[in-house]
Length: 205
Image (cartoon, rainbow, N blue to C red):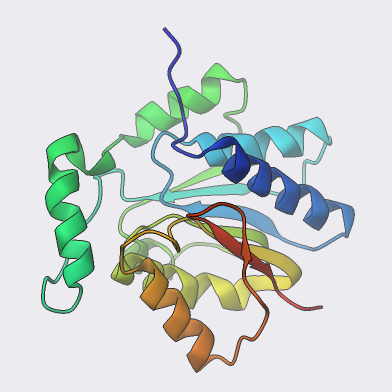
């Protein structure tokens, strides 16, 4: 029986592929990362693209708590608290790191170019050995998760690189975190819709 390794629609997967391929074609330096990976589908796609193009000097970072979605502060993020109450019933998207490793291995893509960052973003991302990034994909759903990730990763995004926000169109705190960060940092590049849910923009050269 087929098992999906991504919750993304074809348009969202196509957006990831297009951003990675354009960054590679334009020589944008850096690695690739997704924060919040579920079964690993988007990061498996990223690694598959690198393999297809014979690229051996870039890594794919796979960042997730692997414990499901975190608890939220209901007063600070009531939208996230409502969503979490619903998602509690389906396990908060919890998938173990070993499950995701097996998914990579099933495609022959689990190797030294795949780096797992296991834990809450606020703890793992500041300590991670991250250099320049060419594509950043944020899929942390909630306000705190998105704020933590964008604050650490966007400064590392190379000029010409892409940032993809999976949950911007969802009724979660993600949108508020992104809007606040863009406002505080005077980011004026227009966001492009990849789907009703997902947006992205390119950091200017």
